[in-house]
Length: 242
Image (cartoon, rainbow, N blue to C red; front, side, top):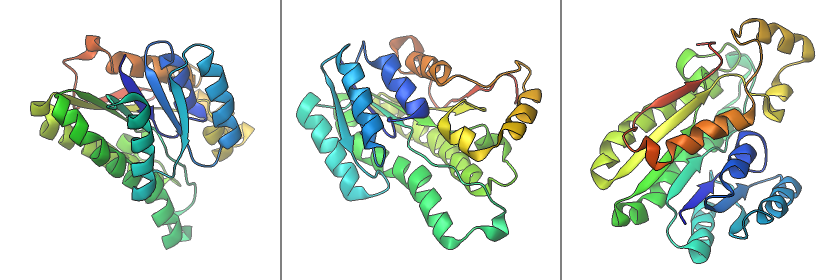
């Protein structure tokens, strides 16, 4: 059974991904602050599959990334699939954005992807197999007013994905990203009030927000052997918004 590590998997899209994959993979779920949510998810998933662990780690810090991977490898051996899902949003005018905001957003959303990917690669290269999925955003392609920092990090993830896919293809490693539109998560609802959510829905041809489980379904396909010829792709899932 292959092993999947999902960063930021205590809530939202990451939680849905863990639920979707629990029946077919060894799982390493990761959290930083949401301990109670992570442990409740762990209990839920172990009813399906005993081969699940939860590890606290701030994936913007190299020493904590090392500990996360070391614990995963101690339990399951090589990590075959890395899902870079951890990230935070930031909503403000650029002139109201501080240097501290910049460091925090870039660290959580972009540095974390670099650190976890770098740590995952040596074992993947040795076994000539690996899959990396980076959770991006529609705003990484389109950009969003009041979310310039968030858009910056997601655009960086898209470029990193395309570049890395070319670099790692000779080693049998596929790298793709998923760029969701507006997904019904706690993070999204924290950024917009109820009136703004109503207005956002009017811009969506399908007339609703994505469910986290729908993003998880796409990811399950992309990490499977059925997607063995797909790499360097930024997969849109946005209800026709883009």
